[in-house]
Image (cartoon, rainbow, N blue to C red; front, side, top):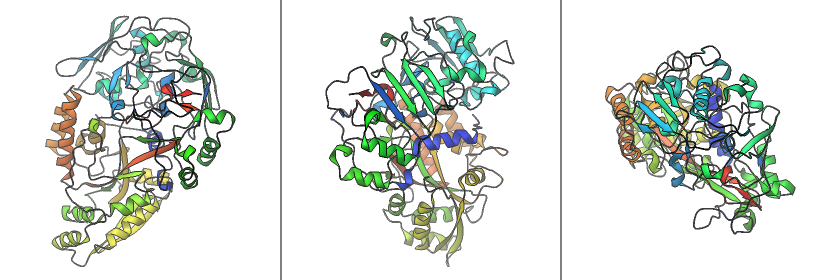
Length: 575
């Protein structure tokens, strides 16, 4: 596939995964029970009732299943939009599994994974009591192709036969032939290439059913029709205030994943991060039963948490498939020389980088590009062992072999945004480490918009810059393919293959793994491919982030999976 993500999508992913990361100091550990579920709010079995308040920085704008990039958005969309499949709502690694949602079971693939068939459950209803059919799912998918509803994931446009030419139901009344509904309970997808991960793709909100008769185009977001446990009763300020109440036609008998304990969900967004953390710390009024899904703790809040046992018990710790790294552009000298790239890899002091990123409780050292989670296929290796503080001696030896016995001078591009993983603090830590190896690093700090434009422009990409990547679902495919598949190099748009790798054997292995529908078997091969690519020194993995967020004292049943890294609203209860 060739991803052509819009800049807003990139920013959304980054904000969801890592807001305020680099301003974090050493944090307090979360206090979770032996089963991994935090028993805040007095312990005991969670009960139904009450109102859960969500305090977020980013508004829930474009609250339309066609326009949302994934079912993420802090998990809020999945309270309203059910999809063919969904993530397993469990803590940690168990939460990286994909499970049926509207579907009776996971999809039935053809032998070569180019045709996927799903049967949906009986008794599914919209919020008005009308039955959900596969025709509603097909229509929901078709409208995600409409130019008026841009912003969603690009995968179906790239993968469905005819998807590259289809313009949505408003312009093409015929519909998309590669999505078939032979009856009201069966839906078939015909793809132009093998996609072994299709069950993961089917978790995205574009797979949510939409009743054609209720579709109001760009205004549908004001009152989208729910199939989940909650319905939208008010959407104001373009998602700054989203009020949800119980959907009377949702049945737990058809939904094994969402617990739906609160009677109401009140999402208040557009708030300053320091205000959010102050309100959660104080826990007054409605804030006692509040959470955040996009705001990490800052230094002042963490200082308070570390000295307060009660607050320490209100910190949720999450992991998400994400890697921060140094990216090389081999088209720019001296990075065209593998020995120079290897020297830089040896010279990196990961301890100082992690300290700049907030400390060891908030960042874990990375020597692999794949995140250190089994679901991605993580295979432990370190081709250029720098130790905890860098190997300047080995770096100097390689530089000498490369003809730079007196050292060299290079430029490192980064963002000036201090709340980002590409911050000046991390750049300075790298500058200091490389100096010990005789490498003088000049820092080029750019405003964040300019930084994003420059590092993703194939014609203007710098030779060395700070970068990051997060997965759309917990598998090696969406992690390695966009960065290393040569067929995904974009010369005239947003390019993510910064090393411009176009290795026939790598491309072929990506295709072969994509044929596999056995996730464990695929993960093993993704890990082996990561190791193979890693030997080329096309980037230097730095760290995998860890996320810590406060929640109100009356919030119970805290579940944080490795799929999202944030508290799962569908499991939370209030005292």
